Length: 346
Image (cartoon, rainbow, N blue to C red; front, side):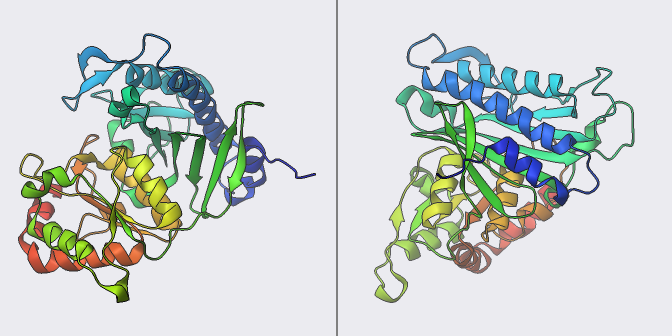
């Protein structure tokens, strides 16, 4: 009989990887897993209850807030507030950070940055959505956390993960010791260890980006796309275009099959559109731990300076050889963009 290992059991067995922690990180990951199960339940019955459609408000990004976005945000915040291991939360849905000032959390060691529901515009059409989270150790030693505690580079992350709510629900995370995936077994209500030591193929045949914005892309991206579409047997081109519109779903597929995900600068988003702190940094951490690569076209994502909670960045992420090739085109055909991005980051 095959032994089933749950997420909780796996985390406890890996506790030795964190000699400076006394179980707090394990409990924090457990709290996130519990909230993910609650959100999964609502996602799966979204068509049956009144949580589809927009809530009638705009989030800090100026995007229409979906009802399930609000629900997911509330669930993760509630779980982290009650768990006692997190002193500050930065969420896509909240303009400012959320201080947790309860007695049990005031001196907690960890900060969580989270996108509660990535790709939420897909909910109404029954396409995969996800949650992205990032965990940092606080910089201040005690007392209330400060906003500066969350403005850390991606290299300072102690853990990151995502949950994908699709045909099955998976939680994938890293603590800097490889990437492991857990699939939710609804019959027992537990995330079960299903994907050990996940690895990005060195190359692939898929590219993922919104080609509808082609006319607004930098010249380097345009040239790379043409490269992807040219027939060449030696390099298995042309590649296949696959774009779901949920970053988590696109990257999850590419990690299993090989591919690159690109969200470049455009005329309307000269600094990029995706958020560095709670989207790009955590996914870059996961992808790098799985043997992939993540840059803004010139610079490693996790080396970028963080100035704002909702800071944006372009991103090229996925199979190492594909990202390196895209960077070649960016250096050759869009060199001026490198300086622009450096100025924006400074």
